[in-house]
Image (cartoon, rainbow, N blue to C red):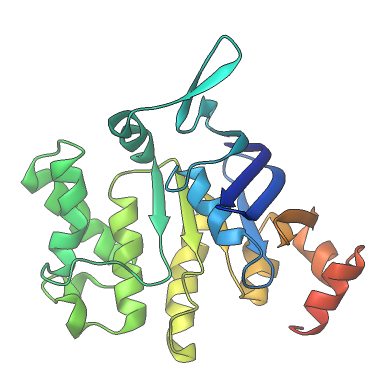
Length: 250
């Protein structure tokens, strides 16, 4: 589903990604771990072309993301074409990014109606189903300010699912939450994983990574240091840098 080939990303003179290569199979959950500033979130944003790569290639479901290839050269897509690609990739951010002036239901139906071309009634029916799925049907008419952080994040997940994405990206979805609210969000993500949704998750939740991930990728300094089965990477890391990082967490 996702193929990254030597992906590089610079912000001015700062090289954040220095040739990241990895693959995510269809229906697989891949968790990205690593210290702050290691490039995990930047890589995630490159996958749906919220950030433009400086070198390398990213493919989702066989399609080159953000660029077209002609005569061995890459040419950036128009913003409209890039946005069309992005419809198939759901993204859940650390800080929810809900529209504060719209109810939970209105947040969810906005994109299917305005971007996906669905009728309001069809989008509303689907939104109620999604709110049921994340345990928040009773909060359909609540505004974000009336919801806890965990509830807002579950609405954000429902909003991303409303476009029926083939891939879901989660950028530290629980790091802004109070500890007692984390479990509800992770439970929704576990359910998605069990239903076969392809997911790439930047997380500090090692228990979730061990339990749910098919592949664990440790990124540091803009490169993949180690990757493999979560139980192997967490229980018997091969690289000294991985051991050092995990010793501070586990």
